[in-house]
Length: 385
Image (tube, rainbow, N blue to C red):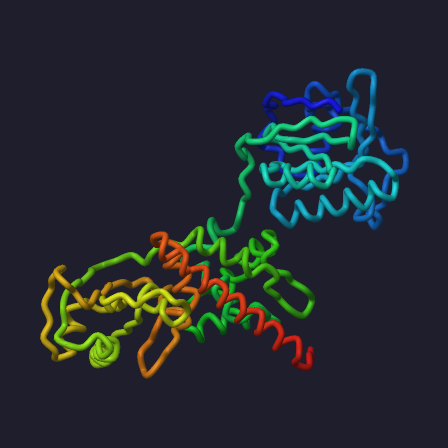
């Protein structure tokens, strides 16, 4: 077997359609030195109806007086969904014709190239990354070049900010029938997002193979991947004011006292994810009761009618004043006190220290079991359109 590592190849960044990529392939602009790529004209052009079952192109690769033929599937997107579609189509077409499979996308990550190598499928991108593999005969590989064709999403980051309500809603309820049902669920659980935003977010979740849209349902298919994306993109709520101090009350009474005080002034209060962790993991409870509130801390404390003082010496309370509504989504009430949801606990612990991240794994397992049960319960219910 001959193995090469190739130099970076430059492509026109404006090529974003399949037609543009095929045109570049036809004109010889897509190459992988030291190999020579040549497009083979297909004498039997597929009809519009047959296009989905036929490869986009056939190419011949030459090197050192040897040649190999490949069937090529082209996609103008580099999303996980586009990769899977191209990958599956190339493998299927190549198996039937006994040719070598190849895909061409705007960008192939190192992980994508590793998967192609494991499965014996060749791939090229427009950033200088690629792999040409013929089992037992040839392996030419290049990876690590940056993505010069970032995905153009309707929303910059669907896993952060208000857009993340949609992902959070799928972890609370993994199957919906309509977009409107998702909007209603988000509103019922304390969030606020428009119908249009949900529709845009769903397009990205579908492209990322996290959500599957069928004729009569919208279903979460990769909960673990969704958890990873939400954790990776999580940002703590913006703090307007933070109060750390002491309250003349026993620790076990503090959550109830603070909740009653917030209710008196019409404010909302929620025990933070980190302070709620003991509900979902074996993480020891901290001596400080921490809570989010949407009113100035001293107004809440004054309404409690219990003596307090601001100090960082042996404190037992921490109040975080924020207008960010995300932490309050889907609260878990107990004895009149609102604790953070399991998801909020997980996200906060994952952004914490080593001990907290270890406890986050326990919460992750709790979330996986909960989602699994929801899916099983749904499967047992009689389905009606």
